[in-house]
Image (cartoon, rainbow, N blue to C red):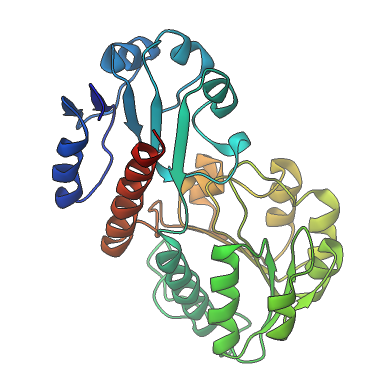
Length: 304
């Protein structure tokens, strides 16, 4: 049992799990607003031995050095690798602090977002940002059937997007760190990144945060009259070649969040479609997130 467990910002856990947290600590405090400075973060943590946070606050080495009692940090958000985490995991581990995170809790909403926006684009459903009727991509309404789609990053999320589009008739190719046998069994072809960019009309980047794979050469290969999705938490591209590609031709970009787009000034670009909403944050996702956070805490105590 923790002596003091602190949620230093809104965690968006369901109420039944918040109640269960009370049984894991002598003192539970869950803040409902975000800290704005390092000093405020340190003050909130105080002498707590357990800390919970979401993705909007960063625990740096400097902050952790000022909080000597921490034994456990629970990230109530995605954790794929230390390099992309909002906690200095390497330093925390060097001090014997256990850091846990969750994965694969919001992928279903992202899949639905990609399908929804792609169908609207191909058919010309809805209106443009200035209220005018949207034109179908290419002038004539089209189905997903036969559409050439390349997936950059075939992890859990990318794999689910590929499966959904394949079910609707798309021809799927992908690039990943290595060829995946389960994808091969489904008929998905592995391609080098440059070849994937050249081959497909639609490319969907499903990468971890801070992973950039689309550089100048990739955009040159991609060419004109193409559709680019980014479902990650940060841009999958270098800004300069991306902006050049976007300006040069009849292209379209889709991102759900500003973080994925990377540049607020691009929101007014008619070729950019950004909802400024995290499409993975659904009612069901909050349930999955909450259950995984609780499971991590229980597993931590079982090891003590």
